[in-house]
Length: 124
Image 1 (cartoon, rainbow, N blue to C red):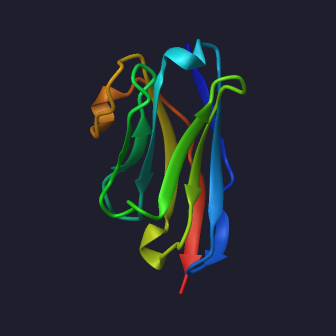
Image 2 (cartoon, rainbow, N blue to C red):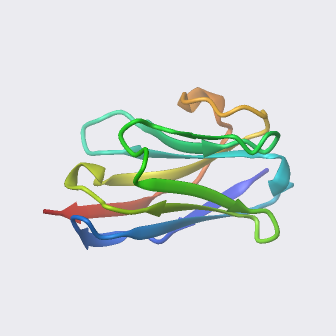
């Protein structure tokens, strides 16, 4: 059983930056594809970015491409999401997710493990 714990959220102003972290335990981190999702109030959870354990391939949602960067440190069992040029529409709860499959997919059903989420609020 894999446990995921997110951190790094907070209240920032537009165009500021934040770095989210997701620490994993209870499994072999290097063999999990990791992803970030977010859920804004009243909206469905949506894919933000993912990184495959098998190929290292990285995928981004169009809405964050060029502003966000995902990375992983297998030695620290941690995946990061660097968020730059934040916009008010980035306000959401951000969730870390993991799957044993080697491909990044954008659907929530694909991921077996989830963190509790960290809040990100971007003021204008």
